[in-house]
Length: 168
Image (tube, rainbow, N blue to C red):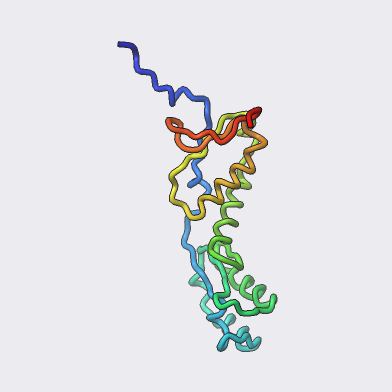
């Protein structure tokens, strides 16, 4: 009987784990309608609420600000909220929790050096339970498609080919 050879270890591929693009940290949400008076933004009361609010509860957290009830909010109100959150939160967005995750993923993805993958075989690892994983898959594919030799999905031992340069 011959020697057992681990063919997976011998593969010349780079594996990217999508969970590496996830920012660890506590997430919080602010429903802007909670800061209104019966669904109406009264400037003086709104400013007073913001000024007296304990913004430190968002210290070192990622925050998304949304309007739950589809209310019409003047643009300057978002600037005020952003100002206060800028003093405490790690980062924040005006929008959904998905918008927050997409922003954070883009920060991570923008830190990738695409030259490290030039003309290489790349596997994007599957089976992570990070939120909105399909967004990361999409962004990675967009960014890598003009750089890598081939892109695969899964694990080195059971990969699914996505594309190989020169083949359609």
